[in-house]
Length: 204
Image (cartoon, rainbow, N blue to C red; front, top):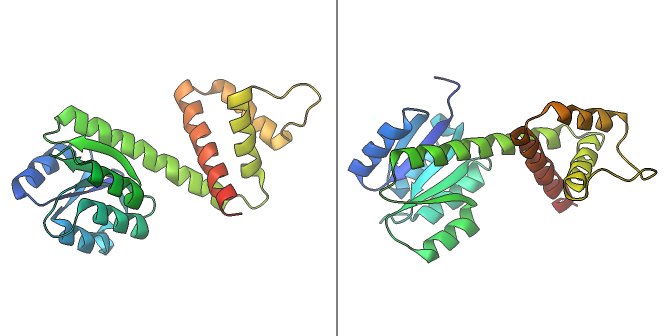
């Protein structure tokens, strides 16, 4: 149970919150918050410090879902946010994307399998973000950055031509290991490489 990711579920309707909790609990650990204000308190609480996913209603009378997501992005940068809504509210979506880095947008009532599928995608995105940060933190000699750039180039342009500069022995060994990876594994590490390259370039 301890190795299952924690999902913070936020809604201002107790019945909806209970129904969603029952579904989510079949695959993840769950903490619930009844309304936006309770969600802000939960985000600041030690019990949710390891929250991986935020599943939040968009329209709540006290604090809007976009504001909850903005605060989640500030306090928990690696938390992946999904928004639930019963209304096709474009303004709410734009605000959530701009303020809280929205990962998915789901309409209520959401079917059980669709919800779990979205949560599984969010879980994989969370793992990707953590892997990128680990690479970035361990990149003392620039090797990870070089690998990120080389992999991104290889994905777009193919292997370097003979005689052109390529990766050193460590990078060549890492790239050679790709031969045993599945397509999904290769795409996962390419995503990590792209994110790593973007984070490091943005810091310069």
